Length: 267
Image (cartoon, rainbow, N blue to C red; front, side, top):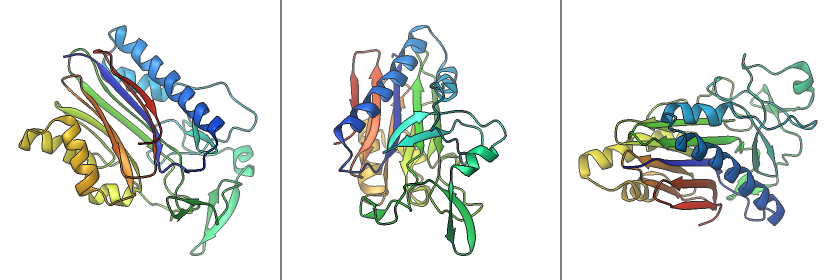
């Protein structure tokens, strides 16, 4: 038994993402991973480590735009060409007047919804217009040296989403799940993740079929989750780490006490 940690920055990566942006994403993932590893080496409990990472903030930048997340409690993120960066925590889940002025208004079904400037309707991600997917997802799963598992997920949801829509991230058993065997954080199209009960299914396969963590993740990604809809990261109480996705890519980084280490985007 040993500690393990994994972080993700969302699935569904633009295949044409410039190399410099890919490197920025990897650098940020590595920075967050190292922060979590340092906390685990200092014997912090798993739940404290995920909270630490979700409370972490990079220095403010003048072009940073905050946006409330669907669960209203976890930190917002800033996206620049699909590079995920922690921006700020919105304590009240609301945008300031200055932040609202940075957003354009998009119209869908008669409802006025905020969306980011520069998100052009003809830009494609995995064959779907970028105005469908809001690439504002971060997740973290941790198991500490005592075998305690914890998971946290935050998302911006869908661009132009209907008012009141609830995605998979705040639904325990779908995009976020942890029990005595594992912790899971998913990313992708929320409705598909909810239909597949992704988080709980990984745990159930381990518990009832005796599959390993990676075998459970592979089964859920390949057999349960619709193709091209998302991915997930997971850790087990035994100190294993696993990741899987059926999109073009997924921003991710992971490490274990046994020495395994990975920072990647593509398959």
